[in-house]
Image (tube, rainbow, N blue to C red; front, side, top):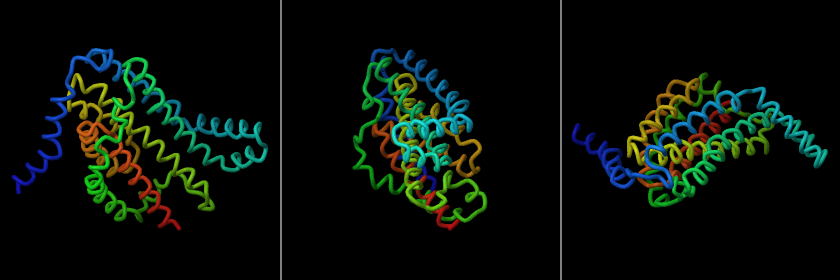
Length: 270
């Protein structure tokens, strides 16, 4: 049994880490040295998390952005402005998605291009090896999907999910789910692309451990099983992203989990 566990750990972690160390440890990341790249990545990461915590997550800011969007749409078309105003709570939630997109993707992308002098493909935003690993991603999703089904009718789960529930279960629910998926795309790029690639030259595969800490911390306030699961997810998805040099597997799993959680919660509430 111990030999089997050791072999699984080697296949999932030890061997990919060795490949990453051999390939990614280097003296430079684009136009920056490895040490400079780590400093820039760490500072930008900390600033983006502060911006998220004190601006993007502020409900007053979200409400103000939703109101501003309705007013701006009203200048273009009165009926459109009124429609957006009627969905004010959806607008609040979507403003969170937009804020996450800016902090997790848009601003780090500018750093990648203008500070590192590299492309987004260099930071794992490429489908390289994605399709060949689809069975593995499905296998990783399976236990999480079963766990979602097991806890979907508990009061704790139903109190937390979904973040937005349409009063009519209409098109606005689909708008929310699309924005929710966009947020996960940006989140995966930030943690599994920007942070990992920016620190890999200095830390090699252990950049994954550096990334895993703030990734776990953004789950504080969520149910304990989800918070603990983020530690495992951070290690597994981080290792996969660095080994395949693609974040699309993580995006697929994350969106599938999020949508299944919302679908399960909506099903039980209905």
